[in-house]
Length: 548
Image (cartoon, rainbow, N blue to C red; front, side):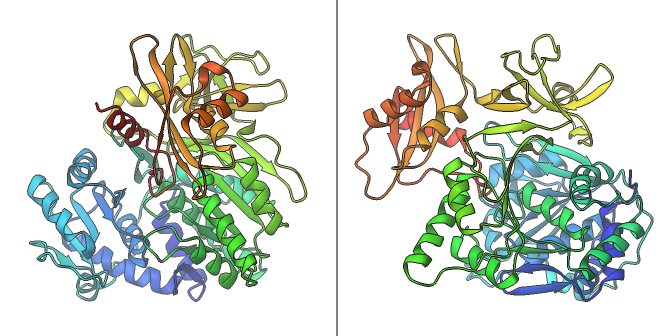
């Protein structure tokens, strides 16, 4: 396995193809030479401030060139990045920064107000670097902050140093079912997890040094085989950052949305303009508005040209069969790859639909050679085809564990019969032929009258109704059953759908006991910027509707 850090890999890429466009953010194109030079100057600023090996650098940023520059700079000095959700309030930001022991925060000036609050609550931050977002900022400057451009111009580029593949990257989970947790990935393990599939799909032997990585990337670039990958989620989500990493080593270009909210029209304009070859989304939350914008443009007589798309990838939330069909109808040469993954590793299972092939049922996947299923009580391996449900597991490259949490690490990363597995808590059944029937995350499992109900199963059934835009299922207390299923639903603009209609539709799709007993309608279902369901928010909505 490659034993060098991502900073060393990126320096070699910049050396071998300085004029190649590494990143596109909206209308801004960034060459490798520019990315490396500015990151080296910022690394000089970090070094001058005493930031070095093992330190943590928080990133409270919208999509912007500075996001990748500051990540590169942190890796150069052997520090770790810490992704911070830009929708968080001060107390939530304090939790992430305190839990990660971050000493540095790079933030957009649009967040001055909340950063001032954080500074008053957290005394461990030694360095604040502000990126001017050109917004109208009404709050006073943050005391002691350093302007990002001043930090770059005032420091000489840091010279490359010897680093290790054991340098770490700290990725915080979304916290949609509890407090966010920091997942520790070594650079070497992350390379192994991300790169293997990409190289294997091209018939390329896995490189074992940064020089080999750069050589392969340049060869792919020259031959026109490098990917142009767009990620719909923002960079603060692990899917986007990891896609960027895997694209770079294949000599490709990463395309990012420049806006601060997901905009399907911007995404499709960029796909057309940049001739994007792969789009990564998070389930129907992204697919549905993309399909709606495609339909709008077609009706207006100005259809988008998305013929460059060779692959559409979804992970992190359900991508329904209907949305797959709608996307493939327009990108008819594209493969649709739906994956079960997590911040803790994977993929645990995949669903690949080839051009001209029907997607089949929603939420049906195929086990990979590294997939296993375990009984969560005995930790006995469950044979495929036994009709028993269990927790999904995957071996192969994976994180070291959770930051400063030995107990959660032991619970999630288990060595069974001499093999280390990552087991985040997704339940499933697996047929003899390897077909995976995903049930959902155990941490949000609903126990109603002694029966287990997985929210994702209910959500998939409900969303199959043409008038339901989105929904989230949660369990709420009930005197008789202990818990009952409640569903938070958003409808189409013209829908007159009532609660009884929703309940009866779900009953027609799955077992009656799994159907919701309460339905709360909202204008829009809240999801994280990454597209993942926020079960805490949904439960609060139901409890508020109950008057609790």
